Length: 611
Image (cartoon, rainbow, N blue to C red):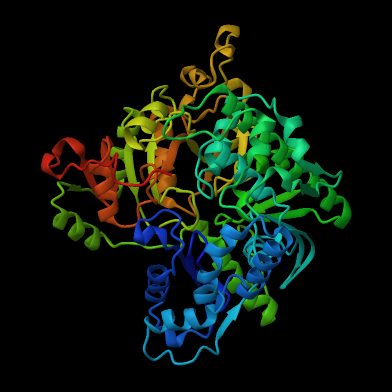
């Protein structure tokens, strides 16, 4: 029996995962326990959870592996500051004391922190370090259903690499090409996230959601700051950026190029300009990803593609690669960002360093990404009683029937079942669900439940077998990482008058039979649901289809803006009582908002720091 503990930490999205003989047993992000979004701290709670799940002490773990190499990262920082000197002295002076004190000697730091879990853990001889982009690539290839694949990873920056191409075959994974810092597609996208007034390393998906409201008018100006080659490789003109040495992403050259300063999110509303900027950077990102995909398909002739790294969470770009039919098959790691690095580091150690045999699974090895915390019915009931909740316990059939009835009556429901998801998407374990046929649902959920910007789209969860009847797509998408258009026969065409509306005003125009999940460009971020991966969720959607003829429901993560996805029954009840959710369905317990003690209501609008 061999146990490997994988850890990612100290940048953003800290996480831990546990392998048992190469199989993924458990994985979780630290933010779900601490309730701090993208928590970068040492993942004490996540490590404790994965060990408890396997009933293990830390001293019984065979190897511990960290997702990147701190010395290489330090080398990049030093070389960058030397190259740009004396320009970056202020940020250099801020960064160095922390590096010298903590980050550089990470093995010592890790050992001290790990020892707190188990006093019998007495030697650091079993601590290993992976390479950042190898961790990403391993997280994409090894759990995939492919015996052979080309693996593309793209993110902000690891040690030096920002984009890599690797070839995976059996238990081998070999990085063939790299683009190095400061040339980074992730940092380019983050610069525009910053420029439009969203938070870097958390607001990138908002920029993607805003893009369809605009036109790509600034594409040519963006191409003045990035030189894109025919094969998709690129160089960024550092004249326009401040991230290499400064404390911001952009500089005055950048602002002059577009004619405006960065948006102040506290005092400035989003305008058509910001929507056009979002549309433009999204188009350039898609062009680069498609060119890269085409060139690596031509060069290596391999029919399968795996994706990871933060840029792989850009489901619109993923959908375009799919639509172009560049590869026969695509698989994307659901925890594509740094959290998934913990998993990739562990898998790289098991397969590449230890040479263990690999057998592929026709679905994949992620278990639907349901790898987190789970609660028994008794634990749920005890927790709810302690919180003073009023609930009814029902049998399984009634649970499914009653919930589907609430859905068909346009009620907003908190749905908490089984294990928590690993990665940024709620996939029917910790979800807020609603009726997609309602033209009020998107606005209501955004403003009354999520307390977030009204333009933010919601995802459809659709029964796997009904996918192509509703969406222009015929491949499985269990992790909500592919965007496809609503089928023409389900669309409602916009009139010329409606097309002239200001970006956000288009939101209120009914554009399909399922308006709550139809974005302004008729696209949707699709999640396919199968009985094998999530029986409760599958049965619920099936029952909703039986009642309404519609095999689709609205799925958004169970949280409010700025809050991590709920993890425990207590988190779920607090969110339920702090929002305008109508019902909470948790295990076999059903909670009706109108029957709760009004003194338990919470003001959730100011509870979490806005993202």
